[in-house]
Length: 203
Image (cartoon, rainbow, N blue to C red; front, side):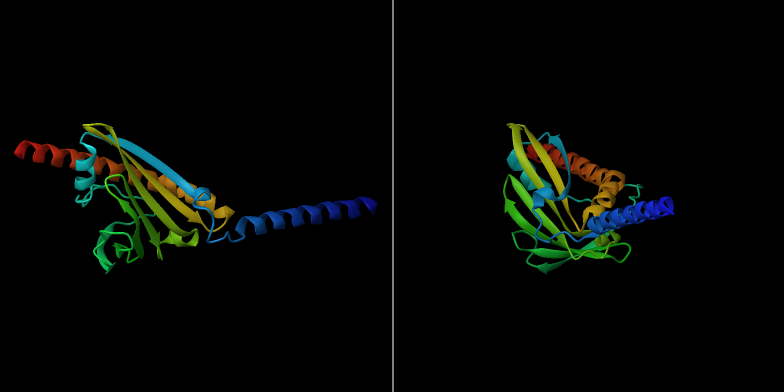
């Protein structure tokens, strides 16, 4: 009898510990969580063009067909955008982004300090990722490597809803978002360098 009672205590204690772990894992994190504690990914590349030219040209690129025939898991194709406030050229301006699945999100400019910094925030997503994040932020930082080359660093930060969300966000980053960012940055590099050479030849 004592052995059975002891076994029950062990089982109940184990179940209680598991329950506590589950509760902690799914307990909502503050919506004011320090951005330094968000889930992040950063990539970078060097563009063969001066800093000022890179800043000017990178803001006027055509990303249609950037994925070519590539399909991204959990990230549908962007079909159009619609201005909500301003013309998306200054801090505070915002627009709605529409996806091929009918999903949407709101993109707002947080910081724009040419030619060094451009930061934006993504809110109100209807994509499946909405179950794991409150919002996300992107930041481009440009710095001159020398007079003819510019280093571009692009960081994405995801504000996770709870500790369990970190796992799913990281999986999404590894399977999808990192590849999408790399394709976007490769296209930025190629089109910026092409435009810079073309403008330089004209002058």
